[in-house]
Image (tube, rainbow, N blue to C red; front, side, top):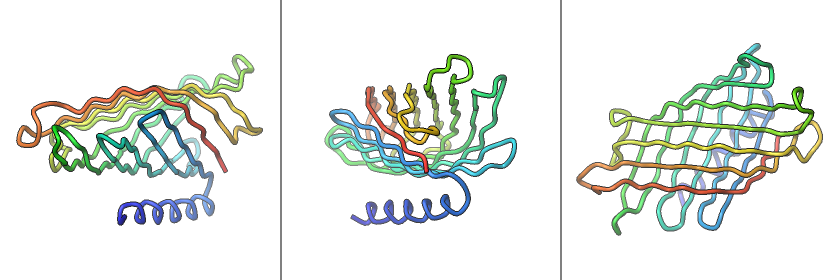
Length: 197
């Protein structure tokens, strides 16, 4: 319960800060077993964009992970392609071999967003994100973390205010031998919607 209250408090603070400074977005995706919810803000720092966000990734049987991101993005090669780089802090609980364990990590995050509207006049958004942390940056029962996520979305509201998307996520968490000798691996396809304010 304390984690949920803390998460809601962070979302309220982040939304207030984003409304004061720049844009704010809410992103939810789901499939039959996994739910992800994220909230974030963007601030222009011409020619770059600074982004910050928080999120939760929940699987009833295997894990509950919280995340806090900070990244900076720049257009590269063409105006519609934005490449970002930053850090993601992770914390949460995992269940493996009928045991509960804790994980925490500081991961390097790489991302790309492509909106080929000028090229094809089609209101699409294509994204990719890679996050990883080696053993020195993992704490508690975890010994390594890797997450890859990609989405393809269609703008459903004017001025790119809403995106309906489908995507794929690969998640791998390695553990200390004291906790588990096997990794937690999850592959999932999901549907989601994102709103920008």
